[in-house]
Length: 219
Image (tube, rainbow, N blue to C red; front, side, top):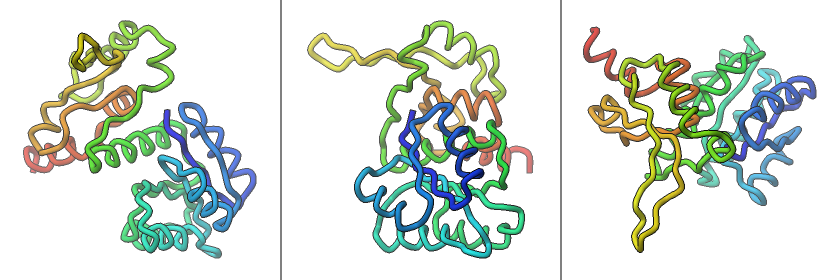
């Protein structure tokens, strides 16, 4: 479960994005760029979801602000169909994904999990244990994920990870998957519950390692 800031000027669109992002994450929101920058400074989120209006492209201004301020946060842009003309600019400025509104729950979940995993990979970090793991039965979650696995590389590879920390202590057990194709293409091999749930068991075509594998072996 990550801390997410939704920034959107339209009340209904903002409400929908807050509701959908809030299914698995802790969400706050801002109506405009000025409020967003204050929240980023005072209470930094792990990820931003930003609405893009082609007539008032504050989302582009926000991406420029983050780059200028050297604030390293993954940003998912959500825009109307007409905002597609600004997608190349947004991606060049560092947006992690560009989704068309109204975005479906699964597509948003996948984009969030992918963006968070890429950010953790870039910083050599591990995502925190999420709420479902803390509150659920890990053995049942493991079985469920293995049963619903879509990616060929992840079949029957989900396991419960607990590492020795020293001094007779071990880490809190959690769901993990050690992916052979991530290792093959130079990515950190381990991915964790939310990424496994949303990408490996949802749509693995969004995984960079899967894309590299497909490009190399199906060309």
